[in-house]
Image (tube, rainbow, N blue to C red; front, side, top):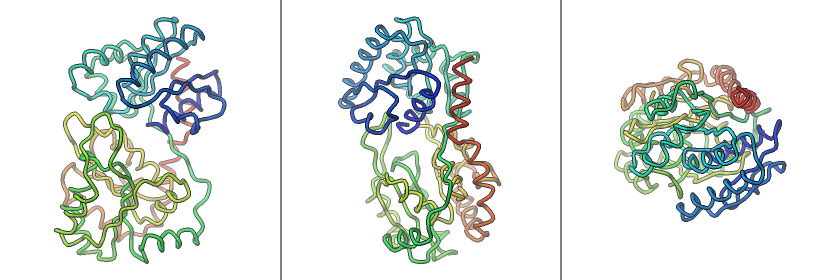
Length: 360
């Protein structure tokens, strides 16, 4: 979400003056052309109040034409700032921020979102949540997040070094990237699908990138220990590698390109939707297909037969079979298809569509 918001700021700065109110430390990651006012993120109540105060103060002094909320969390601040200076109020919804059922959130945040002049949803599933909240169809637009399209593959020496560092040898790699939360469903995948996969493809290793989230609007976590314990009990403990969080782009690219396929066993949980599924697009950009449960916004992020396979939610037998079919397929045959699909989500395309929406 943070990366997406920086890209939104960057794309808008190509045609407009942009000023940003963001959590402390954000300025070091952003485009130099964007002026940033930093606000401490913790405690969250302080961030909400302080960011609203700075947004209103900036709007009064600067008189922008548009005030843009990067998520549902900042909707009241953006709406108030826009009304004070007569600007248009816009918001980008990610999924969970349209699904939270806490009474205070529904009482204060839902009206702010409904009263926005433009509501941009990251997927059809998120748009449906916004509609259920009462957002008018005339205000609602869908714009999928963008992705970086690699210009070239990582050198063979870098891929071999990555394999050696993480003890992968010549194994076929299943890649999982994301926060270790209940919604991501990694523990259930390890328990119900991985044993079948390993029985038929014993040279398979599941590489896990990501960790328990430190800050989340609403998330139940799955610890490494709990996932490893389930794997040990199922007899596949030696087929897991936890790499933690990787922020280096070259290292992450090596992870993608060493993988045979990306697994995305997101669960369908009440009030905890998967808004889109950006990692599936990133995998495709690196030529890697995805197997995923067809839930939430994932159905917009994985194209059946083009960038991977979609499976009926919670059917782990079907998930294992789809994974094995891809493992036994020719991996190189998928690369042109997945890359072509991912190119439709390039950041330049995202920027063009975003500017068109805001000009309408």
